[in-house]
Length: 329
Image 1 (cartoon, rainbow, N blue to C red):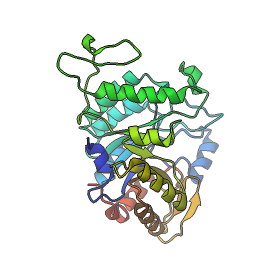
Image 2 (image 1 turned 120 degrees about the vertical axis):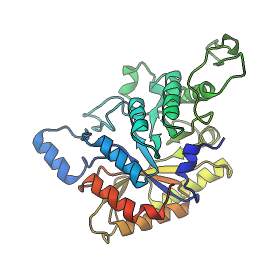
Image 3 (image 1 turned 60 degrees about the vertical axis):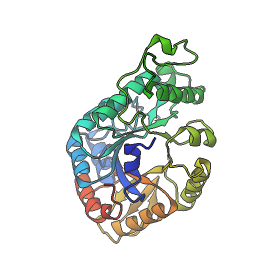
């Protein structure tokens, strides 16, 4: 089944589209880092005072998606990043009410830390409330400290991920009249007529698997609707996209990736690599995005936290000078 939400990320002309990774803040920029340190504010906790206005602005300006990370616990000693701070599903529900057009994505929900049935219900609720705009990115997680705190097994997260994805698909499916959900291994049979409501708008929710999720590439190609992979230099990115296309055998399974961006005020500033992204002016950024599109990348989510410029200013520049080359609507 072709998902409307996933189709929006491939663009009307099957060309690369651009989204944004939340939080929309510049708390990793050099200026903010210095100011926060002087004020005694903790690293990795963004300023969310303008989050609603910035989400509305991104929607209005024509960005294709807003992406949320799932960071259940703030760990300043080992990781130092609180992500989007808010609970991912509560925040998605809020964004569904704030916005009208953008796809709402997760990058990514740590499935082994959560009950799959709860995830199924929460995701379907967001999908219905947003009018079918959800893309559910899923991960197996990589922070060992979290697992015992949630009663989960870190070493067993790969198996838990596979079982969780099967449960999600079963919970979203519509049973035959007079029957309900079947969950092998639990004793729950269809005749018991237990079900998970609501059902997704399109009958299913597109699942994007982040990284490897402790699975084989073949398993991901068979069970995922999209690949959500980590930023890579262009040569490595091209190899990764080619492998994904070979694994999916030409089926419609888009390749999605995030990118950190420090957009400089000088439009002619040359691009220089930073960790997981670029520091660049808009001209070189445009060249880089065109190269990514030529490699077969379907969607790039830009994370603006490394920059020093006001976020709204950067959004307007991107909308005026970059988005017209990658229309998503």
